[in-house]
Length: 116
Image (cartoon, rainbow, N blue to C red):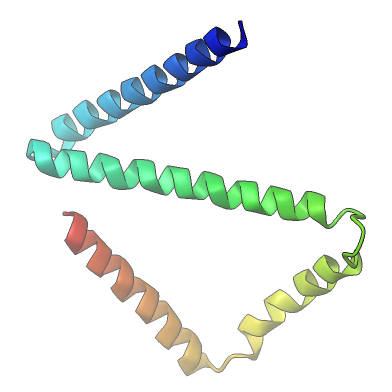
């Protein structure tokens, strides 16, 4: 019985994913009037981004649960890190901040050119 239940669950997840992919594909194809290949690339990168964001949130959640009193892990380490993290940005000189933001913008533009 557990094998059939898992198979039914996997079947449902796959079909929901395919339906979401189809809806995004048709919506992007209709709104932006792109070719089928370009639309599939856009949908792929959108789905990849959503998946990676989910992994990021999961990692943050697991780190949060790991910091709550697990043996061998100093509980105050996360609090000290979170206090020091905003100071890093303020201690940088203005030109370093501008270079970093320009680098991220240029990287995003290159990625957009690769996708589109």
